Length: 423
Image 1: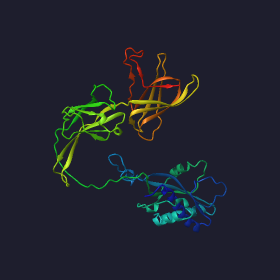
Image 2: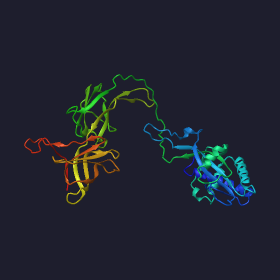
Image 3: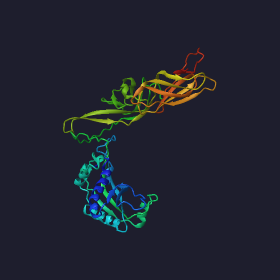
Image 4: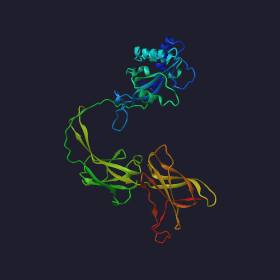
C-alpha cells in the first residue's frame, strides 16, 4: 500500500527508467514530466511523460470498501486502488527521425521492464534528484505495479490531445500503470478477540413494551429536568428492571405491570440533553447454562420510546452591548440553562419585545461550541434597545416563558420572564 506520494513516485520511476534508456539510444535526449506544449521552432529532443487521467481499478474494486463496526468505527484503513494513464509524447528532429527512435526506445524499455519492482522504486526514492519523495512507501506495496500499452484509435487519441489548447499533435502513445493502492490516514480500531462464547435458546414471553412516555402532571404537560416520567405499556414489571436513558441505566421508582415512574433528578445530569430523548426498559434474568465461563445474565430490552426534554433558562446575561441613541445596536448575550447542551446541537435564541405597540421579534443562532455546556453565547446584530422576553430552542425543544398568575398585577396572565434589557 502507499501513502499520498504513491502517484508521484510512479511518475518519477518511469522518468528515471526511461532516461537511462533513451540517453544511450538518442544522444542528448531528456525525459520530462511536463505537459505537452507548443514549443515552436525546433523542439528539445526528448520524451514528455504526462499523467492525464486516472480511474479506479476494477479488479480490486472492493478494496475501497472499509469494513466498519456497528457504531461506524473503521476496522481497517480506507484504501483506493487506481490505474494511472500516461501520455508519452516524443520530440526531436523529424528529418533524423528522432521522435520515432525515441518512441521505439521507450516502448522497448517498458516491455522489457514492464514490472516496476520494489528495488526500482527504492532506487528512485533514494535518488537525490527526487528529495520530495523521501517519505514515499510505495516500495512496500504488496500488489504488483506494471506498465501496459493501451491501444487506442486515432479518434480516441485526438480527444486526448484536444485538452491541450493550441498544442499541435506530436508522435505519442498511451500507457497504463496498474495498480497503485492509496491508503487513508484515518486510524482504524480493532477489538479484542472473543473471550467467551455461548449458545442459548430461551423463550422470554414477557418482553416489555412501552406505549408512551409522559409527565406525571399530565400527558400534554412539558417535561423538564425536574419532572417525573410516567411510562405506560405492557409487561413492564420485573424484579431486575432498569431504565436506560441517555446511555446510562438507572433504577425506576414505582414499578407495576403497566406503569413505571422515574424521577429525572435520579438521572446523572451529564446523561441528559434537551430535545428528543430515547428511553428503554431493561429486564434481566440469570441463566445457569450456556456459557463456557459459567452463569450469564440474559437481558431483554423493550422498544425505544421517545419524549421531548425541554430546556429551562436559569440566567440571561448581557455580556456586551454597543450603540448610541435609538440606532440599532450589536450585543452579546449569554443564556445559562438547567441542562447541558451538546456541542453539535442546534440552538436558537428567540427575543420578543415587551410592548403592545408593534413589538419587534428576533431570532439568532448560537456561537459555535467546543464542548457540551450549559452556557450558550449568542451574537446579536442590529437590534433595537428595549426589553425582551427570552426563549431558546434546542433541536426544536423550546423553553417556556413564565406567566404572571397574580390577579392584582397589571401584567396578570401575561408572559413576564425570563427577560433581558438591551440598553
